[in-house]
Image (tube, rainbow, N blue to C red; front, side, top):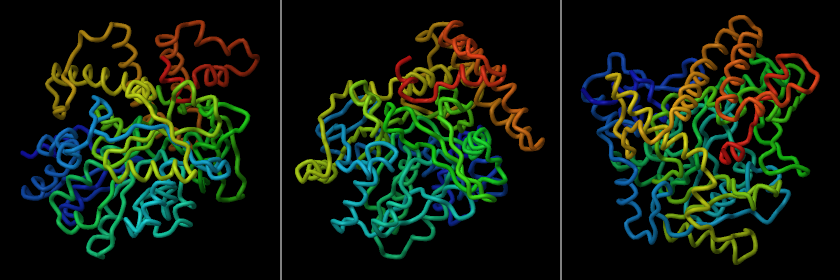
Length: 470
């Protein structure tokens, strides 16, 4: 039986939609409990084979090393964890007004604008505001459309509909996506000559993990906007008086049009290290720097950059044309560019690698020991590389992941946030005790406030930079 059946059965499907496009929709991708996933009920064997060939988590599809070797055979450098590349830099757009409304240094939106202006592509396939949901994949054909849709969207999406909508229209497209989506689209293009001729540029995003829709809803509810009244969110509002990692979260009400805001560090679930609302597929991913993309952008969570509120991008250019575009930006003054060492780039995602590589080896070991299926990865199953304390922390993080979804479902049914806040605050507190120590976990309890609020604030260390310094 093709391993896509194991992917779906094990909830290791990220919802990318490559299998659906490869089978002309005979493998549907549907939204359930706030996340997209393939449904294989009644799917014929030939379509399961086609789906497995393009699924980024199936054993039949090539791994990221193989895909990168095919597309970047002459890349000058290779570093494990980063992949093949031509240049490795830190970049920021030299327009503070532009950067203010960008998630980080503005590198991703700046780059895809260059692709349009240089007539390298006709359109950009990327995530933006959705029609029937907060976010979804869409196509932009102009700079104005790109500007409207920039900023990070921590929200489950799928490529299925948008790729079907552009297939065969004769236009050239750049695709922006997280690592598994880029790899799935690469696999799809290898099987589909029409899409291969259209998807001509792949722009990757460094990824910590994917979130279900409930992540946005939980944060918004804590600001005062309930899920059934939620019009829009902004995950990363910058504060010029604060560090690059100190974001404000905003939620806008459909009924009143009012926008409410709170610092992300005050919101339970916003701490990336807690993995609340994380898709289970991310437990089985070893690609952090989108190693199959022509260029990858991420946050430069490095000490010398985090002091600057504007934010800075890590840029990994894997093709000569991508490296040339970045260099041209530096030469014409539109982009600040600074060379990075591989160690700096890896350090920018230190906590991410700790969870996604060291933790993956442990999770693969657990699956093997239990007799459960797990995808073949570039990381070998292992137990002895981790201390008992570290294994306990990983187990608690997985408990937070699963409990966050079940508790939030209960909160939705009860139309009250309490069924989520009470149990998850307790779990998060225990996690912080195990990870940071009792003094750190109880520090904010000295502030006179209600017990629940105290628990929430004591564990809500929100930034990925803080996670990276553990």
